[in-house]
Amino acid sequence: MSIAVLLLPFILLLFFQRISWKYTNKHNKRKLKIRFIVISSLGFALLVFCVVLLGVNESESRFTTERWLNDDKGRVYLVDDLINEHELIGMTKDEVFTLLGSPTETEYFKEEDNVVYYLGDERGIIRIDSEWLVIWFDGSDKAMKYELRTD
Image 1 (spheres, one colour):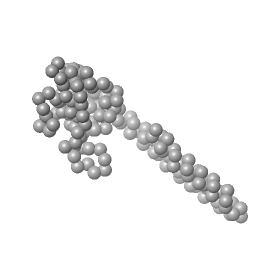
Image 2 (cartoon, rainbow, N blue to C red):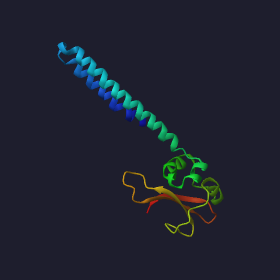
Image 3 (tube, rainbow, N blue to C red):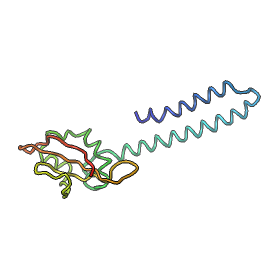
Image 4 (cartoon, one colour):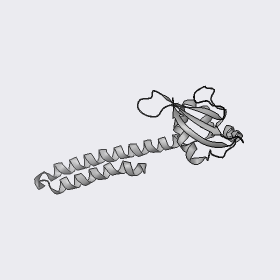
């Protein structure tokens, strides 16, 4: 999906250039051809740059227990992959602790039957609040629900 979103503006650029090429004066064809090549090259360079950045971002957001444990503030980028790849609901408390380590010592969102993990500063341009993963357990210490919260 992300690559399709990147390709769409480039394809539109080529489409509009093709239309402008078709309806321009034939006397300035050489000048127009140079302009077409320059604009297409710049558009292609930007496309390649965005695809590389997308690939880097994708690899940086892959969840591993080691990354989770070593980067408290970067967890916010790992949590989506964690939720997609690991079924937290139904895990025992010990399984959660093995996967995510010890919970964060905090009073935020703390209740008797839950654990709280600090994820880092909230995602977005203006990072005022923090994000947290809250997991609730039932009487037999199995995870029954989880939420991502901001403070």
